[in-house]
Amino acid sequence: MNKTTSWFNVTSLVLGFAFLYVPILILMVYSFNASKLVTVWGGLSARWYVELVHDQAIIDAAWVTIRVGFLSASFATVLGTMAALVLDRYRKFHGRALFSGMVYAPLVMPEVITGLSLLLLFVAIGFDRGFWTVVIAHTTLTMCFVAVVVQSRLVTLDRSLEEAALDLGCPPVKTFFLITLPLILPGVVAGWMLAFTLSLDDLVIASFTTGPGATTLPIKIYSMVRLGVTPEINAISTILISVIAVGVIVASVLSHRSQVEKEKAERAVFLAG
Amino acid sequence: MAERRTRDVKPFLGKWALVAVPYLWSLLFFLAPFLIIFKISLSETAIAMPPYTPVIAGVSDLWTKLSDFTFDNYVFLTEDPLYYSAYLSSLRIALVSTVLLLIVGYPIAYGMARAPKSLRNALVMAVILPFWTSFLIRVYAWIGILKPEGLLTIALQGLGILGPNEQVHIYNTEIAVFIGIVYSYLPFMVLPLYAALEKLDATLLEAAADLGCPPTKSFWVITFPLSLPGVIAGCFLCFIPIVGEFVIPDLLGGSETLMIGKTLWAEFFNNRDWPVSSAVAVVLLIILVVPIVIFQNQQKKA
Image (spheres, helix red, strand yellow):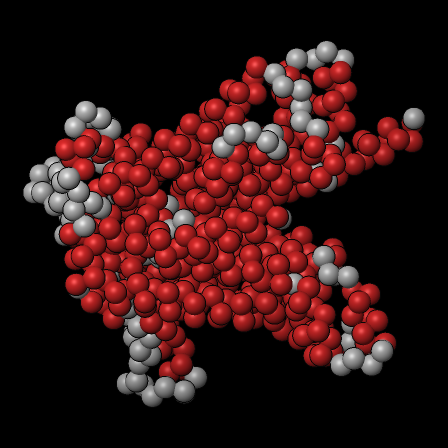
């Protein structure tokens, strides 16, 4: 590489990452602002965090959001992993084209359409809107993301281990839990985390499918933002961003470490053999 | 890969359960809702809860009900220029933002792919991290920056570019919407581009350079054509959802920005007109069917 292109590369990386991170950092810094006005710096203070702790509506919304996220991510992980196995293993069966279409379409489907159509389904079958309808909606939305993540892991999987187990008479279900699942686990965990954060984040689909008593945090934040920018919103945002950032970084370090250890073990086995 | 996949796992009883569970879930909660949305778009508005006349109560009176189907909601969409211009303006905004995303995202992806190998994973992580944090919060962050009395005005006044009584007028305009979209969708554009550029064989560029090809020419002759699969994937991944985007135009665009996602939301939540909002959704779906099908074929090949 010559000097001019690497100078160009460094500049574009610096500008690109500044663009991605500066707005978030500004938002986080201003959550510690003592002043009620978001744009006037009034000194360092944690008063907005104290106010958050005493805001029962926000605590309730946060609790609903966490429960919805946990349940829907878990359902979506099971369903999405199954869908990924089907797409990876069964190349030919009736309705495969429709199935893969239904798995990939929600990735790009505008949320207003998905939200409205699910709401109309719940009304049509007489399902009362509330906590569970949001869980079902989020499961449907996020299972396709899990399927994509798990499928990319399945493609690189060494099938000979599974085939050996099956040839030796291990039942298929047992083979899956003893061999396949441990091998694709990093993909499954990443899929769960992605599903969880997508559910935590969703405003549009939750707004359509929610009912009384099931206000999620994004719905609450949205209604607060409509009334104006306040340091309290900055404070919730900072907490949410920090929790997710720490979670994602820990998960990636852990998966990296397990990868390194696995490679070490394999090398040891290879040398011993 | 193809030969590995020709051999299916020995069929076992569980196979049908494995296929059936996610299949039925998707049929019930993804496909069926679209049929319902289609049906309701053909029904009349009624002041009841739910606010539409039931289309089909049972299979027995299917045929009598068929005669009640009405295209009034669709006729209504063509009569009011609001809908027509909202669709056009959504498509225009999505197209312009996709081009902007490509222009902003390409140098970043290129820089990542040319960075030292040891740094690349960290860089990918750094692009993904904002994507994991809330969409709503990231859009909200821009309100404080772009408001007339916001941080951008303060910064420009401090630098002496703006006079003390001048303000930036970006908030509640289409420019703010473009900034918000480029900011929010950037990872969707950068990651597929990076995946394509990282695979690129550097020896091709070296060979071109050795033979006297200038870097800008070898970029257009070699790098760009080879990164086209990433360009296509990134553009579809951004364009399709942007057309139906609601949060960004609603929070940053103000009343000036017309987008169909906003219109649908207002029709549903403010006017409580379910049949008309269903018709709006059906037309949006028809507009997006072609790009979605192309995207899926692309995904299958990948």
